[in-house]
Length: 149
Image (cartoon, rainbow, N blue to C red; front, side, top):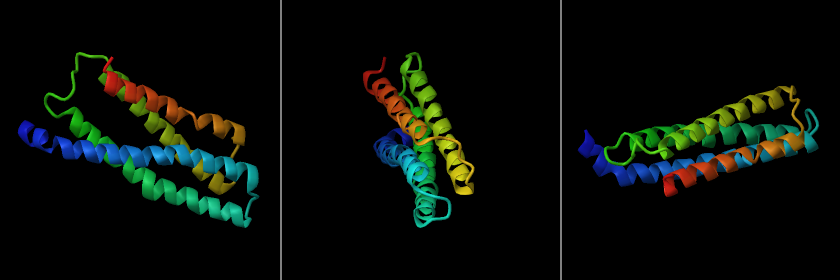
């Protein structure tokens, strides 16, 4: 099994990078859509309906599949012999941040459903602040993997 994973490593890594890029794009863009939704749309108007469709499609057709592929490819990489030094700190730092990213993604899912039902209580300013969460997590993840501290 180890040989198969080692031979597939460049392809799995490529798939992982592509999935992470797609997932991150959604994590950056969806809160921005929420800002416009909260600050500019009125319940039932054309902008409200348009943003609901955009938010749904972004989450369902881009973010959800990308996050699943990122997780599956990432776990495959983690269990490829010789790739991860489990005695180092970086794999655990990365894992904590990836779990944090996933929790943030699920929070966005809940917020989208609240906006869809007209039950939102989060302000545009709060969504702007939350938009920084994936950036901070990404910085720690990239530094963890590249610098391997």
